[in-house]
Length: 218
Image (tube, rainbow, N blue to C red; front, side):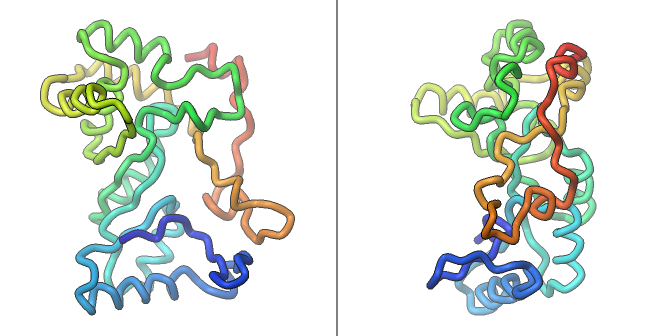
């Protein structure tokens, strides 16, 4: 059972509530109550930064079992992965294949599935780009939740976990693709009547559009 976003909304008025009025720790206590009552076995979070995890761990009686976040070669976030591993918080990657229905703000940037280096690795191993991306995520000891509506794609996704092995050159190439760029940046929570900004959602300065020059350096 997850806190899906670190955002508070009044269920009666649908108004946003700032962190100062209801700390995340108050929400977490309610989830801990669910564990105590036997309603759920594990509780976790989603879209939490290192700072938010540190703040939560400082008050939590039951630590989160999982942090579900966007993660793919364009957004690898090694600091978050390292922190979760060090604190025994499992990291689950959503949008591990990118997200074609939520394009980044730079229209010149290739989708992860059609990025030239990913295509080359897939051709090298006789695999699909999706299999390469899933295998890479599993190599990082994360779980993945790729989305597909096609049964044969689901079968291919599962096969990547057991049949594909990436070598050191493949892993180094994929590591070099990191731009710290999200597909889903949470801007839909932000606006003139909202206390939330991209900066306070992620606890970091909002990165601008990836330039064509940055892409060409890959």
